[in-house]
Image (cartoon, rainbow, N blue to C red; front, side, top):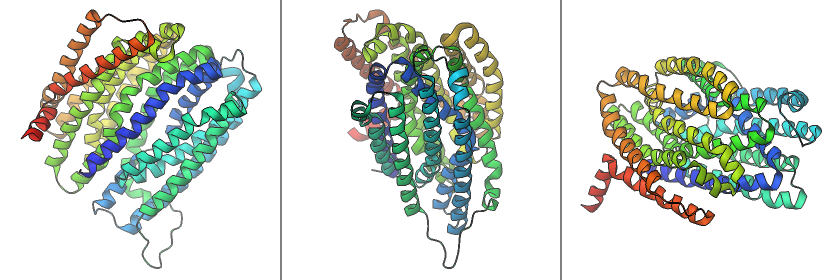
Amino acid sequence: MSTIRKNVVANYVSQIYMAVIGIVLMPYYLRLMGAEAYGLIGFYSMLQGWFMLLDVGMTPTMIREAARFRGGSLDALTFRRFVRALEGIFFGAGTIASLSIMACSRLIATDWLKVQKLPIVEVQHVIMLIAAIISIRWVSLLYKGAVNGFERLVWLGGLNIVTATLRFVLVIPVLFLVGTTPTVFFSYQVIVAFIELIWLIVETYKLLPALPSGEHLSWDLKPLKGVLGFSLTIAVTSSTWVVVTQTDKLLLSKFLPLSMYAYFTLAVLLASGVNLLSGPISGALLPRMVKLQAEGDQAGMLRLYRNATQMVAVIAVPASLILAFFSRQILQVWTANATVAHSAAPVLTLYALGNGLLALGSFPFFLQFAMGDLKLHLIGSLLFTVALIPTLIWATLHYGMVGAGYAWVGANSVYFICWIPTVHRRFVKGLHREWLLNDVAAIVILSAGCTILMRHLVSWPNTRIGDALLVLLLSGILVAIAAAASSWVRQKVVRQRA
């Protein structure tokens, strides 16, 4: 099995495992700890997203520079100096940002969150713990970027499985033994985050090349000058993307009662399964595309780009459609709570469709990343943000979480239709037509048509087990249909039979 196939498989195993235990256990946390405590988990996820503003493009740049080192474009000393410079930035900025959140913890607990039942003092303590967790986990991203750039995704997948088990599964006996309070939950998460960081540091330093004899590394920003333009471009686009994806959650954390915010968080979490299913391919794709481009094999890079598009479409499109068209049944199966299913179903429908468009619409970024030219990505991200944010604010203020969902679907639709063709034309003449018609359209149209038929023809048992089995059956059928519509999958099948 080739390295990229092993990496894709490893990514999928770890991502599916994390998604499954998250999907299975999150409703259990809701029942065990209460809606407001679960709302704090959603607030933590949102703050962690905003924390990415500190990244300033350094994590993707770490992936790219590690891949370039492996491709022969960087020498060992230059790469080691680059890593040391990034370590200083990550540790320093993470500490300052974490202390800032801690200093504002009282204000957040009393004036921002709509707390109704939990003691304010406990909420304040939880926010301080959240600040520590997101700081530690954010620093971990630097070392994950290094491991990713070295294409050690099998090891990284194993680490993700272990830490996910610690975070999601083993926390349950801790809650039973110590107490089912948010303070206990987040104190435990601080310990797990620290263990993960130490493990990543040790592995990263095993992968780094040895220093030439007599060389000593001191912290200096000079090694970043050569990648400053590339990193700043990513920084701006990443920052706008954080604003785009987290503004709805930030606004709703202010306007919704903490218990209702929990329902919104559950719906968005389930919709994010679309991205979790497509993300592993993307994680393996980036370093390999950069390496092929660095080696001068543009034809191989474009072939990989198009094949990966079909691979993601076969998985992400059915997942998006199933979640969107059968949202109420899926939420009822998942939570066994009719109130949650009724409140969150419209949000799940809209965010699932938006995430399906996002999974496919993210591919032009991979092409630009491999080419080392992100100017159009910067322009597109800024235009996307300028169009979305006012719409999102207005829709959220007037229509709450459902309005945020409509804004999300609309913005991703416009981006997919209007901007992706511009990017493709800029880099490869004639690519967009081939990509859209041969790699995307057939899978989307056939899958959507079959989903609509299923919605009108299927009769639901209205029992939790029966509905769950039917969802699995329909999902399997839809994936098979999407695979049959993929020319890449058909070619693979023919080759295996030959």
